[in-house]
Image (cartoon, rainbow, N blue to C red; front, side):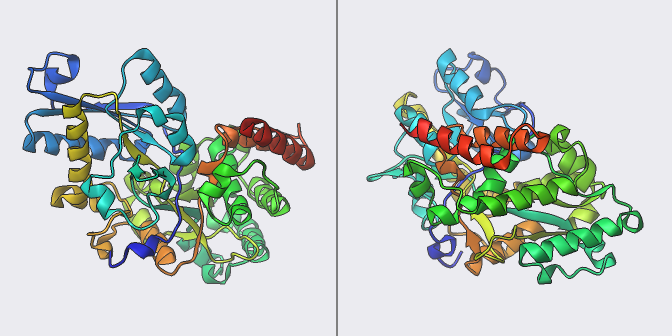
Length: 431
């Protein structure tokens, strides 16, 4: 990266997807308490299942270079509540040495366990603005995983066959017109529906979709959202229209549709034209159909009045090091994270195996390896971004909002009731 200022001041996260996955490095008995005295075991508990396999493979390389270190990885997300699982780890006494947190709300919840990482090479290399959400005074309490962006991921070939130019879709009206065109040509395109809206996943609607409309209200600043005593739903009507549009033209019943079905069954198998997701889906799509993933996948911004043509871009998760670990283990954990982001081997994996958009200097960003990430990087480079403020929500408020959106879609709640109830819950959690 040529400049730390590329990222600007955007900070973030994403609760992501999948089922409970557990993996361990090649340390053998070391992870089972049978290690010799000079062995160090680092248990990692983290919330991105999409790169679990690749992360384990990289950990094995680290163990080969550092025979005194054993690394065990547990990846939790999607269908399993990561934060609840992490809290269970701490309450059971099986505390991980390294764990992931998402923005200021989760940093605040686990504050007593967070080691100051300001002396790490990774903190020094982090792009400007990426540490803001996890900085307290001079202390840096987390290190960014990567940059991510999301929006409307679409099938390029279907758009072309339907005569739709994606570059002309900026406003909600533009999008609605394109959706109706796609819907009218479902038989010709061989699709079941235009969208696959996974309304079963509260994070998709309550965190990601809602964030696009809350970001302007909080000036795209996650810390402003974190410190806000209330929320105004200033763009609530726009949010409602976008939710209605996706649901009306979605595979049904949308309330039974989950993330895995959305990405793997409907989009990767080309049964729908558009899904609301981010660049983290690329490894899954690639695994299902590499040719489709490489050549026919694009991303469009979710239209927001006044911010047309901008994508939400931010930091999905931060690495934290457990301050309860002994000094030697804390240092070994820092060393591993530095190796992950600053060594040649680590940087190669970050770009090519993890398919990450780097959040650090020292990377050849021309080698970003998937087309979705490339497009997101171009938006970020041009400053066409919307902030990730949902990590500044009160604790679990995104789930509250997501649950209310589910009730709205099922007809159990009006939109006015949704806004009133959600505002009340925000204010109650802030007291």
